[in-house]
Amino acid sequence: MKRVVVGLSGGVDSSIAAYLLKKEGYEVIGIFMKNWHDGEVTIKGDCPWVEDSNDALMVANKLQIPFQTIDLSAQYKKRIVDYMFDEYEKGRTPNPDILCNREIKFDLFLDAALKLGADYVATGHYCRKSEKVNSSGKVEQYRLLAGKDQNKDQSYFLCQLNQKQLSKALFPIGEYQKNQVREIASSLDLVTAEKRDSQGLCFIGKVRLPDFLKQQLKEKKGIVLEIAANSIKSVDPKNYLDAEEYLQELCKSHSLQNACGIKKGEHIGAHFYTIGQRKGLGIGGTPEPLFIIGTDTKENIVYAGQGENHPGLFRKGLFIKEEDIHWIRGDLKLESGDKKPFLVRIRYRQKLEKACLYKREEGIYIVFEKEQRGITPGQFAAWYLEDELIGSGVIDSY
Image (cartoon, rainbow, N blue to C red; front, side, top):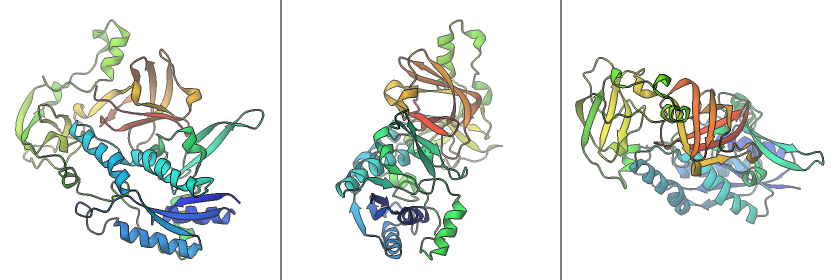
């Protein structure tokens, strides 16, 4: 009998993942990961770890599977939280959920599971795994596929996994719709059946992000400059004789330092803000709401523009440094000089957008068919072929 360790989070999805695996005949062990215990910055009543741990225990008892808790909070702080602080300080916006899956669930947690003699680990992610086999029946590549529920597909959060991690991973609810998962939980009378989905940072919950960041990042008053829409110049191919230079310009961040700006107020520190953010500036009196279109942490300036359609919010392309490129499917890796069309997303729940990837020695340039809103340095771009996630990388502030 194959042994599988399920990461029981105290939510309905991991509960049903454990149930389905036991039903299939696996020897199932449930483990709750305690990765955070500072309630000072967590909004009261939102994803407290004690409550989640108790719910996970009740589910394990109901399903009659062994259960234990492991404390990974020290490693979580080092690998995820410290990284977050460092990225925000640089004026970038990290994605802790993607890092949590790469560094915690499918690294530290996977190691703990293997020490228990597990053949696999399983989570409640809405995604699927398949295998590419050769003529001899040997697995050549593991494939990460989108979940059947298009509204809940979470493959993006797993875009940094590698082949070894995928080989040990199971995603039991990937073939199910969310309503089906809740129906199964209700039929089993599980305590998690009607529990709302957790929000906020992975294993932390919904937090007051400024309070969270202020634990290590100090306030530093600076000015907010409103940038006129006509100050954002489009990239015209007629101005570039060199195709490579044109490609690079398409994928650069908007240059705002020399744009026409009017002082609108003050902020508490450029590192506390992110591109596309609307709330938090506390500046009114404009015909349309102000959106953040850029930050400069060196000069401590926040750039804003009026309206959700301000051209400063849109870009045609992005760049990923060579060292930040990750291929799940190494056999489909692009070599320098290659170009290939993919479907790309730059955030969770965003629909897949048509784009072309251009591989160069310095990295990958991604040019979209349509301009994209809120391309944010520090976030991840993930590229797909149909419903298979092929690779990903960290968006650069280049």
